[in-house]
Length: 209
Image (cartoon, rainbow, N blue to C red; front, side, top):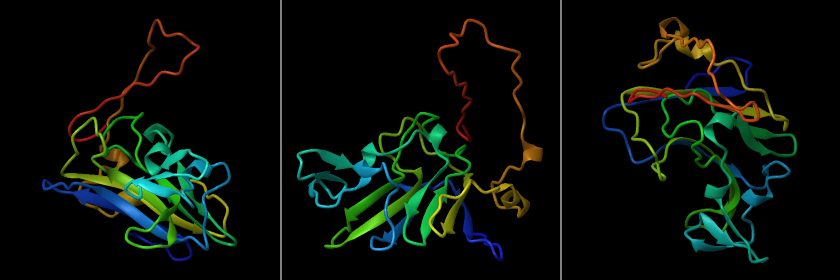
């Protein structure tokens, strides 16, 4: 973890050795009375639901079901997610995903609102950065690599921009690969693509994606 004087962010990176683990995540358990999910995220709100598959999936009074597994974004779309409140906001910038597994279209849990606390009667807001969850993973966990950097950000309620985390490569963290140590791929064009669609090209091995 790294902090800067006068900046309301906690910058983080996590090294995973050859032992790995069943799960790897940054998990924030926030006061439900102070924070909520942004407008339009009602499918993440499980208040009033009855657990039908652990507290993760609930049956709502209107007969619909809600699950924190259904509210995720594809890895390629991750920027900043969080929970605003009155004069307060807590957000995650997901940062570098090259060490995670599953590719650009893989989804995992990012946040859910008002889930009942495990073993308790109250409600809470959860914000995750799932670096490796093992939830129907399509690739093995990448080991002996640095996950991140990523950041937890605190604001007066507004959604912040993605911060510049490039300085995190200046500390010599084990497993960090700065820009100077990275290669590049240059394409002169790919023939036969339909302009009506967006295309992605990916490169992956056991170390990175």
